[in-house]
Length: 395
Length: 98
Image 1 (cartoon, helix red, strand yellow):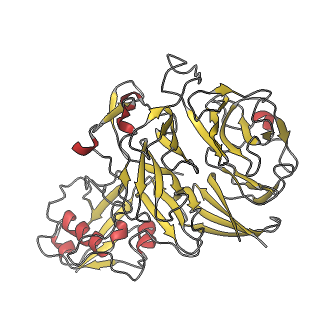
Image 2: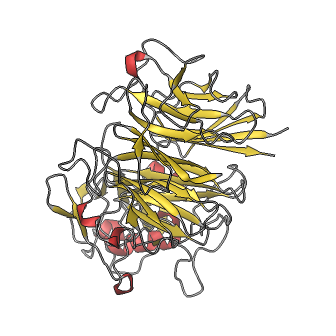
Image 3: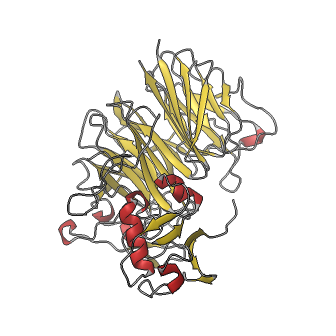
């Protein structure tokens, strides 16, 4: 019998929700690091007991936590309890909390500023890690998407972090500017068939792709149209909220933009809109069914000025045609007086059959569907506002 | 011994119960106390001072002997009562809602 572990980050701590493969009865454990903002928790595909967590605070800054036993115990990488934390000459073994932008001459392009809200140039300042993406093959390699937008990588299990500076340095960096939530790199997709290919998305700069493992990057925003920037068809400046991909068709990408649900069939070289009959195409999350690469999910949100569900109804919309034709999924979800949001990292699918779908709300509910979205039930109702949801299917 | 009082979140992070006692060679300054604290508890690096600039994080305050020392130079000598251990050195999370 398989097991399922749902990893939930909230405004005030992390939670782990566990069930067997039926996904009917759940154990809830937490809060982990209560009082801290847990932006993201994600397990390694190569070693499910290896889990990385972004723990952050306006007071105390950024902490990276790691578990090597499936979430039972946690430590800051390099500082496990009982072990020496310094080398014999007194130097720290690890600096897992240290994210320093690359301004070295070797990077060739030591960027120092980006565009600020008022149009002036502003220094890059590290604030927090929004998203952790473990390597598909190596438990010790993990990517971090941070605010102010940049991509970092650790190859030693999170002990030390180094920026992949080619992203900020490819040329458009000085034009990037923060959205209302800050200038964050929030999406990292690793192509399972091409180790050199990585997609990232930044609010509000757009989507970017590397084909050489992070050395060089280029914007992939052709076809996006955004009325909130001076040139709606600009190469960069689009507020991409989320990108999703199915591993069997890595050239097909789905995007939830600030407004518009988009699709690319050529690895982001061009995009076209697939909002179709959605009641509103504003939203944050988008995800792909684990076994059906043309089945996708979104949660429409009323508008950019009203970050809550449309018509007071919490509805997941599913398309089985890769977009354009959408059906509302409402069974088990509140259909009146519901005004929550579902943030960009707060939806996940498991790999069981039938596929499980999970999402968390700013109202603190985590909902699960064990039948690909046909019906839903809350796992837990009253957590702090949910920032992120990930899921692991375990043997 | 210097006595340092940490906010609850940092005590939990460092697995500390109660005050921290540190040996710091004179002259005892905020910088030397924080250096000693971070050397003893590396998991606190970056949580009190920026990991690179060593500037105090904006929402933390340093108090001692009923004085706010947050804006004192890092290398300024701490009060004798702190250096002697008679009075603790407080690291405080600034008041904020939410």
